[in-house]
Length: 66
Image: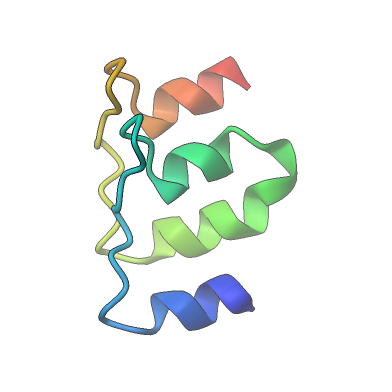
């Protein structure tokens, strides 16, 4: 519910990247217990599923590694 509330705020940058270039989606798919968060992020049209980090890894790459 917290994630959904945050995503409802248009000021939230859903594709923000940390110092390594990872996005919230990258972190969420890398954790098996975060499936509800992944669903919330993917349901938002603003989510860039192809945004790569500094190593060139996309969220899909992290999902495969998990």
